[in-house]
Image (cartoon, rainbow, N blue to C red):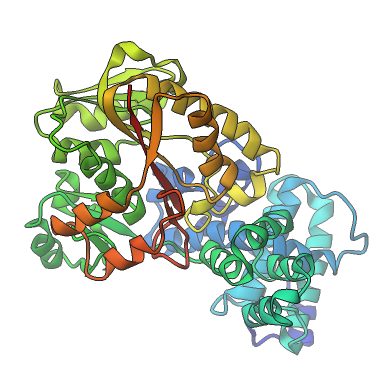
Length: 491
């Protein structure tokens, strides 16, 4: 709980004549665009406007944006208790100003309460809601007094964890899920699903991951780059799963010569693992001449496949014209061996005759909530069925694009069964020429080739499902959430 040196008397004397700092103005603008559903926070935080801010302002803007998106459900709960009309529908700019102010009061101890309140009021006015600015001022002052008195409810993870353990397996799951959802600012319906699928302890781990800043991982395409990064002030730690992966401990790896030259790449370790598994899952003694990466953007996995198969032709497909253009630019250095096509993966057919296919399909992204916190606010329970329909179409088409004896990796960054094992089962039930194969051998091959980090073999073997697919669950594994299945075309 954040406590501020702010008394009721000080609050009474506070004025709302503050100017709006560059950091808060940028955060307010980004949160409004995210609320409108126009762009993702990750993209908006990398725009020129944000990059022009000072380092201090850029860090504060990032903390405000990600903090509001991660804690929005809980912040709204706290604010609602202080509204004169708790069920009143507030315009988006007013909601965002209240969330920003509440976040600073409740979770950002170094920010003076007066600055949090006054600038939130000014942001409300700047959006054209002069009348509502009085309400914002009053609500945030009340909240500041609650914080000073220690009576704000706070974000009590220990209480949520205790709730998951009380009465053992006999505890009512819905009650515990609801308490866990509020304490960790996740949608109750989503947490209820996770409790049902994975149990209370793992659901808590998933929620905790969703409220944490994801580790910043990179791939050493050139091992010599590690020493260069150290000389430029970047401190790295070994990867948890892969020998070529590193975790950035401190410093800005994206400002180094090695990053600009493509000798290191920023990429989650789980994402790297998907491509490494694809590279070792091929049938024994099969020559790999043509590879399809059928949902290739942004291209990190394509680059790993190009490293592992330097003689093969790779066809990188992307349905979005904008993303395809960005992909082609990134992969241009590998032309003509790697070609990019603007194509809907669900339209692929037998004429392709790929020896190997990577189908990292579009999904709900519930395994990446730590990295993409706004996903939780956009998802609905119906989205999984809609995603699954698209995924089944892509997987069925990709299997038909395989040559006989060819193999395919199907992967998502989703935690949901509808997008993962149920998609694989549904497609295989309708295609007698394909079969699922356990990834156990591929994992052992990675270890035998020295591509796994120390201790990773056992962790990965323990993450295999009964069908031999790999399920990486955040909390249990030090990565985003991923599902990976191996399928072979037998005729």
